Image (tube, rainbow, N blue to C red; front, side, top):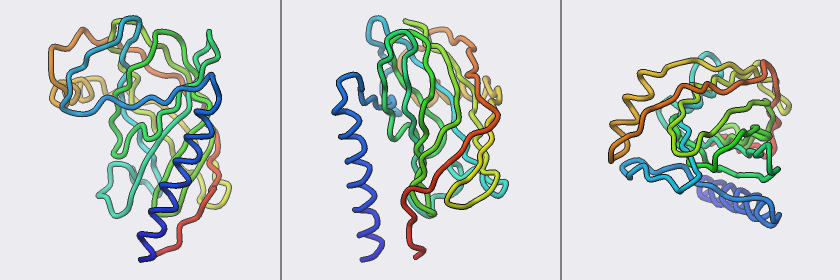
Amino acid sequence: MTAYRNLLNACLAAGAVASLLLACTNTTLVRPVEPGTNLVETPGHGLVFGRIAVIRDGEDQLAAPPSSPKEFGWILMQAASGKRYVASPLTENGPFALELPGGSYEVIKLMYEERAGWWEGRLPASFSVKAGELVYLGTWEITFMNLGPGSRISGGVVNQFKEASDDLKQTYTGKLQPITLGLMESALQGYFSLMRPRAEQ
């Protein structure tokens, strides 16, 4: 019963955050492309894909066997328009594919949920979306430097182009367009703040 209540509270809180953000006229909720679907792009949009790795105690938490719900999301700002895009969740197990209007983007906020609770933070990063193209952003490794209510994190981007492109071809249907290498740029350090601890079961 406690686990159900915690899950319900998490869902309600996430919904409240999303509702509050979407109340702003300049914010749009975007969903990742679902596995098994055709990569069909809207005119003027492009697709970016890659992987998120959240590393704690030397282990990628998103890639580890699921012992509890895990989600990673981010809030983006398009540089030219100032428009914000919320992708929450962006991924639950690491890989992601996201369709966005062409342009340059900044990652302005991170959201991460795991057994310890709900985290929000900042690790500045940027990337570009090319209209009508598929762009590989790399594997963004986000590492906890310490674990507490305020946790320092470090960031870096790893190029795993072959593995990621092979995975993309197996995960999605339809003919893929040529893939461009456009690794995202990440700050070296940032932080996570524990917004809502989850009671240990």
